[in-house]
Image (tube, rainbow, N blue to C red; front, side, top):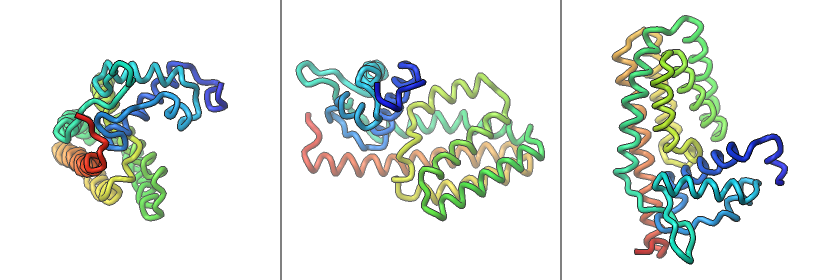
Length: 231
């Protein structure tokens, strides 16, 4: 057992591996038709191959991977419009949660969001990408908690699992867009402007999706030019 596996169940490790691979596919780090080897993923994540193989099977069921005889798992075809659809769905749910958060937010809630936003800005200014991604996640999570709807949060979680949490910092324009857009969302919540918060959040998610599509398309174009894509 690898050191990082101690104290964590196989199901959790499988979920982590699936999230990692899914993120690499969505960010264009793994190209359509490219082989995905369990041993290499296991080495990268410092875990054994068993939970990675389970993750590969799960991703095949989700449609992210294809199992080809004598070749193994390969990345299933994916196009930018697929990514736009996922972000559009996420934006509608996240917008509703932001609207509800604007109606329910207390002074303490707003102060916490403000603190998270300042920490996010500081991370962006330092180029601390891992911290930036973490604070971005916390900012959105806190808004969703304020909104108070467990069912909507559950549905958002289903959609968001297909959106890469890692690799965002590699996407040109994302750190600045995140910093700028969060300010608008925060201002609307501070003013208890539900429709404003909905509009700002939906615009933010759609913009993030478009930046990812541009990044994804450029990576796929490079991979195709290098002969990565196989008909």
